[in-house]
Length: 231
Image (tube, one colour):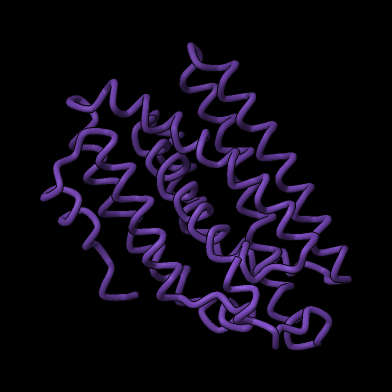
């Protein structure tokens, strides 16, 4: 919580803050909505895990409501059109993979990339959030680790037959993360969230997830390098 002491200049009611917050808040709302829909689709593809995946989708829906309340608390209307465009590429790639029955690709996009992205963003946001949003976000981030864990466990159990598809899905989707981060760099900075910290936290979360699945340190360095020049 030291960062709270270091950020006395944050004016949560300023028009500059609220303007940036309208886009960042929309992104987390849309991210939770995407996750809700993605877990329902995964429940269809992995019928033996249907109950678990439906439970995860319901948790994401609750998170969405929590973040909507954060926006109302600051009297901010989230820019949902911006957020939908922000997620458009990952959304399309997930839909395409699902239509082709590519469970491994769907899990990499939702359970690894989106969850690690969310965890990183929430970790960096919590120390600089307003009190209401901080309490909401602290509760959400605990849940996200369990969502990440589902994907890790399934992919670890199917690692050998999934490895080639995981590498291809990583190559297609990881560069999108850097474009996403670049597109909100200024807004994030207005909220006292530095892009370098977001990148670092994401890389830690994503690298740990790849390690837990079964990739070697050398593999993780190679996989993590895709698109990082754009960051």
